[in-house]
Image (cartoon, rainbow, N blue to C red; front, side, top):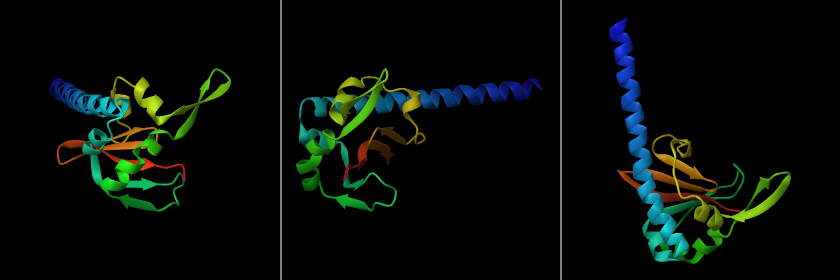
Length: 142
């Protein structure tokens, strides 16, 4: 019984260490991405994106569309300007993806709602592919 408890403890520690490594890796990516967004550096943000870049409208029935880097460079400002709403007490207040990115400085394990290789931040999806994090997908308003 003690061996089983020891094995479970070791597994829990290694899973915790693995999750912390993912958080640390994505935090470094997020810091670069966030800096690019806040500096209005479209080229830097595009360098951190995966191509073809994929979008889909707000509904599951909407088709996914793959886009080039040129499309992305022309449309990133629009993606960042998309509005969302959140409650501030009983009142709904608008915010944009750019504002959300500006506010979100710290990544936690809770942000990994897509497993160890995917992070959702509102309408933006980030994925780890071939050992590299990238901005891979965005839901669009239309």
